[in-house]
Every structure is written in C-alpha cells, then in structure tokens.
Image 1 (cartoon, rainbow, N blue to C red):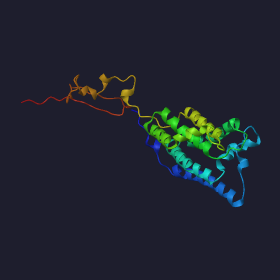
Image 2 (cartoon, one colour):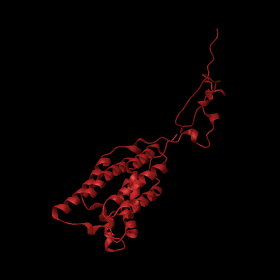
Image 3 (tube, helix red, strand yellow):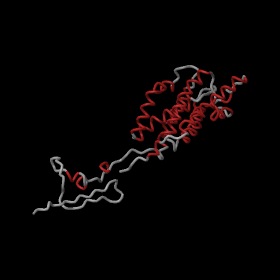
Amino acid sequence: MNHLHDDNFKFTNGVVLYPILFVLIIWVVFWVEIRFGLDFTFLGVYPQSLSGLKGIVFSPFIHSNITHLYHNTIPLFVLTAAMFFFYKDIAWNVIVYGVLLSGLLTWLIGRPSYHIGASGVIYVLVSFTFFKGVFAKHFRLIALSLLVVFLYGSMLWYIFPVKEQMSWEGHLSGLITGLLFAFIFRNKIAKPVKYEWEDPEYNEDDDPFLKHFDEDGNFIETLPEEEFETDENSSYRVNYIFKEDNKD
C-alpha cells in the first residue's frame, strides 16, 4: 500500500508569513501613493504597447482605490496560504509564473487601457486550486476545490465584460493560466492512498486475511498448518500456524 507522507500537508511559517508579505507589499505601495501624492497607474499593463509590458511585473502591486485594495487583500491572503500549505513544493512556481503568464495574456487580449490590481493573480490561484484538486483525485485537495467554489464561485461572472472599469481580460487571463498550470504541474503534489486491493493484479485468493473466511463469509479462526508470509515490501506480515489440541 502506498502511504501518504505526513509532510505533504505540513504547516510551516511560510504558510502565514508569505501571504502576509504579499499583502503588506500591496498595502505599502498604496500607502506610498497616498502619502506622497503619487499615481503608479502608468506601471500597469497597457495592451499591445511595448511600454505597457512592464505592467506584467508591476501591475499586481498597484490598486486604484481603497475599495479595490480591500477586495483583493483577503482572497490574496487566503489563497496564497492555501497554496503554501497544500501545494508547498510548487507554490512559488504557480505564483511567479502565474503573474507573468496572466499578465502577458492580458497584454495580448486587453483593451487599450491600464490594467492594474492583484485580481489576475487571484484568478490564477482560484482556477489552479479548483482544477488541480479535481485532477489530483485526493480527498483533501478535492475538499479544497469545493471550498474555493463556495467562497469564490461568484467570481466566475467577472471573466465577462459585465462591469465597466473592471479588467475582465485580466480575470479571464488568470482563469486560463490557472487551468493550464493544473495540467502542467503534475509532479510534487500529494497522491491519493492506493490500497493493494486496487491493484489490477490483485488476487483475493492469495490474501492471507481473506483466507480466514469461507464462501459464506463465516470467519475461520484456525487454518490448516501452513505459513502465509507477504514479501518484504508489503505493508503487513502475517503468520498463521495451526496447532492441534493435545489429547490424553
């Protein structure tokens, strides 16, 4: 039987510290704008423009107002924390490459306007955690997928142009990127437990435990004298020895 390693889902300081760091950075950037009367909107993604390419890196840290910032803060914290707990080995790859690829897609398909905010990255994380949990078929990851749907399922509407002055192109780019990454990052994720009886070559007639039951399902306490022993790689080892009662 393949056992799930305990360290697949292990709490570390990074589960909390990295999300706090991300949130702190976007709040500090916004504070700098307010404190010194600056406007960093020009650092956003401006599609089909060479100068707009810089926004692929900088746009996730820039927000138009306090409402915009607040709406992105909680999802960003929750989803990045989930990434570093459930997908710790690939979390940085998903986040960093997610920023770059979703930003590039936004640059390719977006309207001629500045696209700013961390919502594109949030859509990457929502999409990835949902689809990856489904594809992985691990009960904990599936549970995470269902939780994501419950918390952020309504965000699906915003990949369409349903609201003015909202970068639906960035949202759509994030969704596509997360789905793509769910296919690409196949390794280094928790695997579901696989039992011996799920093996296609499993033969129940050779199972030492099942030999203790007759055709009607009745338990047989003792068996004829013989020893049943599994190989060294098996998850258990059982010996059955029949002993006759001594008679006077």
